[in-house]
Length: 435
Image (cartoon, rainbow, N blue to C red; front, side):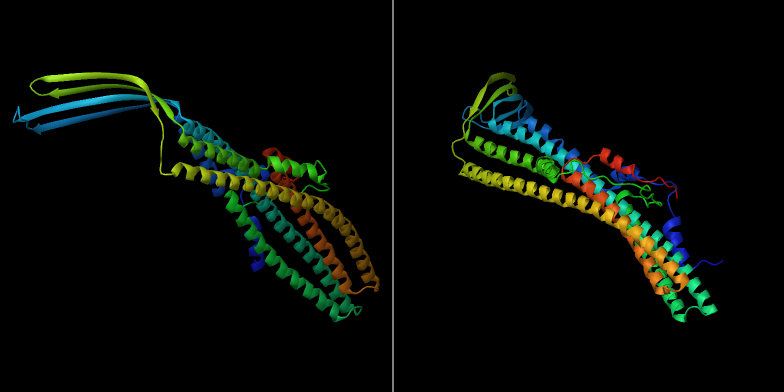
């Protein structure tokens, strides 16, 4: 039998799949290797890890060599023709003994490395959320198709029943037309749902580099647990100190404070130990070689720099004020994100319980309407409406479960405690299903 366009769409969406099913952890590993945002964060961390090496360099010895080769031509009152060559080189070792600015710069560089580590942790947390969002979107689209297809089968049965009843004269042609309209509508909804699944699969591939197979749904009879602790205040307190954005901004505020100290050091003297070894050779009437060795301490006292140092200090003070204000903003943002995610989990759990009850009552209502239709006290549209209510409830229930799980991940991310162990724990909630 020739495939219909709908069958071709289904084949494209559900059958052209990878050979192996992906679970949450496998998807996360794939995202770590493929996602460009995460690759950028990893490269930034590797680059910033060199900051401490560069900052420490200002406290370590520096060694340099200078050399020159000269040809001298001239004249004097004694000798009208001066023509000789001179070669020299000098080796210098300089060790800072006291340089406040270099010490502050080294402390800043260590904090910059710490900031990059926190930002990388933030990138890992963000990747988990983005991957989970894409994963659950695919699952939602899958479940929508499954619900529509199940509804379509039920409508087809009701359509066949309406046709039989019309043929024997116990129902009007209106029942048949109503069932046919619902059947055609479900056909259109199925096409739209399959298209939506393709969109969600491609969005998933944008994060992981893989077009997902048919993913396993949540295990049957699964009861989602409320967040632990069950009170919002501990979560908010944790977020205000442990959120990755708050921690990073706190470190940036410390860097800004050190920048004030570093610029104030522009008024302070510096002390260096200096050792030089030089050799100078001149070729005049004969080779004359001079060797010098110097070891000493060099003191440098800044006197006036055109008001630049004072200007830099005022600039650094203002930037520290900005960093402190940004830290307050980060704390408030983390607290608000935590409250939003916590309420999302709480309301999601309540919604799930309500929809589970609605599913039971909708199933009972459908059975009652079918029975009433069979004995003539209900009409066809009553059965169709009951079917639509049941399947809409099932679709909304599946979506509410995924959104609640995602809010659970967002809650941990806002508090700065989201880890791979949490993702692995969520992974155990799903069926492993091969395509």
